[in-house]
Image 1: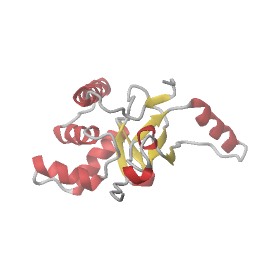
Image 2: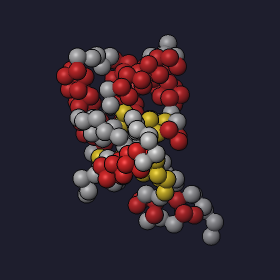
Image 3: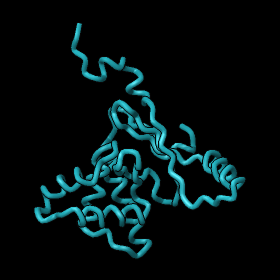
Image 4: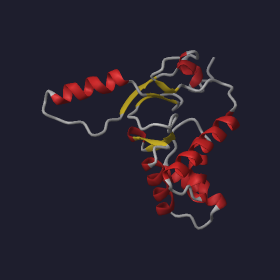
Length: 173
């Protein structure tokens, strides 16, 4: 695996409980070190995001959150998402208007995301060559890059291994 890959496409099967537990432990440690609170609501939203290995929309999070917290409203989820983004614990996938857990919250980084068009799986990269090239190209235009997120759509290895008609649920003979 390349050192530029922060979160690879998930292979099936993997120890999902361990995956979520590790993410939560990193979040607790990072928040503690920064002196910020990972409140029960923030923690639950992060657990819900890590509960899947695909981007999740805010209103889907709200529906799940209401199972535990009946009074949860959109501002509750959006405040939690803002906090988690600010702490570098999640990323926003702009093209999908959805969120995914950060594979390496131990250091700030700009991401490049590979998004599968068939199953919505996402791999996260942090390739400094790509980041630096774009910054240099922007500088030739007198532009200073403050932030960049790159989203690349295609087909993940798991979906490529299955013909498209089968993965789309085609039952015809």
